Amino acid sequence: MEHVIDNFPKIGIIGMGWVGKAYANNFKSRGLSPVCYSLDVEYIENRQNIEECDIVLIAVPTPTTSLGFDDSALKEAIKLVGKNKVAVIKSTVIPGTTNKLQKENPDVILIHSPEFLSTISAEYDAAFPKRNILGLPSESIEYVNAANLLLRILPFAPFNQICNAVEAEIIKYAHNCGGYLKIVFHNLLYDVCKNMGGEWGQIKTAIAADTDSLLAYLEPFHKNGRGAGGPCFLKDFSAFTKFYETIGDELGFEMLNLIEKKNISLLEKSGKDLDIIASVYLLNTT
Image 1 (cartoon, rainbow, N blue to C red):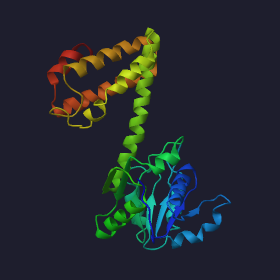
Image 2: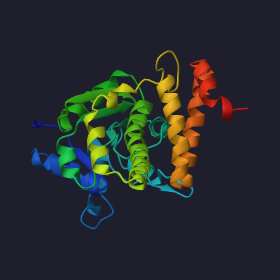
Image 3: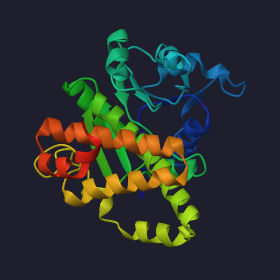
Image 4: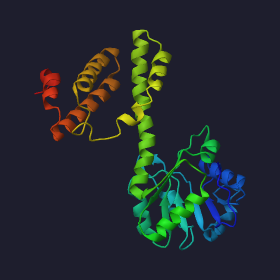
């Protein structure tokens, strides 16, 4: 299902990398003519035209360097948006950025709508999103109206959520960092499998079949407190961590150890399963 739009506000896009181009192509496929601007020769002449656009999607790089998070390109892009127009930040930004930028640019309505595109399927992902997340730095009717207008021009998604800007920023990091952690942990499992003579394909298939696990552990306050408790979780993670030391991967073992320590801290602060902690870790806690 697609949103087909007639007589609609003028749309602009700043940043014509793979994200910006994917959205531009989608808008064009639905009969819209977005004003596309970037430093590339093909688009640079549109710089002044961005100011005339009612809604501007910003998809510029926000790299992480040795100095940390860099939103300098985003700050410059927002300056191009016209007064009282809507600037939609598609770039990934650390929590608190949208609110900070809104204070620095009070004449522009900022919305953070994170993208969830993959480099290998960006065109498809832009056209058929699983969700549209819109984070607002204000609950005023002006911002809510802008969000509802944006939902009308974005590609249709089966799930739409309007929340505050910080929540939207965290949702994006939940996606990227959650995937990051899963990949790293599955690499640890792969090394165990390889070391023990198993076939990773068998394990991967069984993990994928456990569709309930995706939703099972979303609640930080799990069974009367924070942290992964209960006799099975505690004893099995401890046993696996000790076993993993035999694999010879020092960094992997250190990572599991730190996760274990963080979990114990959560449990102890919650007063949860202290008896089980004592029984599992009695010999290695002082």
